[in-house]
Length: 433
Image (cartoon, rainbow, N blue to C red):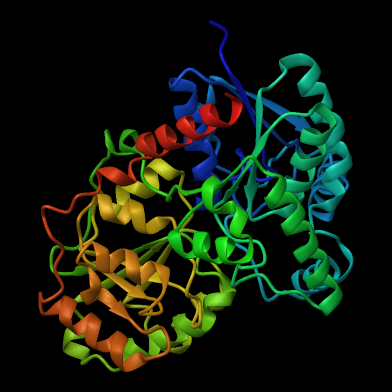
């Protein structure tokens, strides 16, 4: 029997690194093991703050189609390469830190938000559409899959589905209009996105989302979705934890590990975390070692130095995913930050934290999706309001005093990437049958 074929459309895809690409990687990896012929349509080259080629090793059974683009990020990348060649330099530069407060970043975001419709990747749409038609001629997929949070992915998917009259599904790993980190500069922009969200979502054969909170919002807006929407959470891949290596740590310290970047939209929460640390007695504070494994952001390092907390907080920089997990094995506890007022985001790192069955200090809204997940697992003691330094300090003290626990019998099998791909496999088969 011929294999059924799925084509994923995603601007963000390896070799770029970071947590945002892992959901798609694991879906493609395990759908292949379920007998699917998997392929991906993505961009050929772009400028990004970190690359992780190790992810490509998991995708040996997935065909990757790459198209060029005229979006600002990819144009800048090609210009950099051009001038590098002019200077006879063969050096490949991989940034491991970003300066989100730089003037050129602010200028780019202003131009992107006001003039690039539907998003900063709009210049990819015509090229991706053309490459997608080539993929259809060569591979003839049975179903398409668009991934969020980039609307351009959905625009390309919608155009290809209409052209070739095949079904598509939308996978929301973040929301569209309902994403708390998504802002629109004018009423016109919001109405434009509202119109296209409705058109693309309602024409999808199925919708997948990362949490019940987003499912509820979408069904409230579009009641006809009720029978074609399902939650597939983020999770962890058991295969990633098979060959972890122990990393040394001071024997007399309680180590808290944060995995990933603390983006600038979480600045207020991190400031409150710093204020909470200042409220902890110096003798207790001396027992702590807080380690950030991920992108080094200048603003956060400056804030730590200004607060005289360099002896407590350290930044290791970005590591390939497997190496980053090695540092997670050394943790006595983990950390999560979301911005105040964010009730729907559910950061993917929490699921890898859960694998290690250690306490989690979660600076998140007590009534938000992340908190609800932790409460369902009896881990609510680590939740502290992101706007309340006193609550954060109290939670840290409880950790130091040994009062913050994690149940040894924590049942996390349902968060396995294998089981999640099994859910997606059933959805895709239902869509094409």
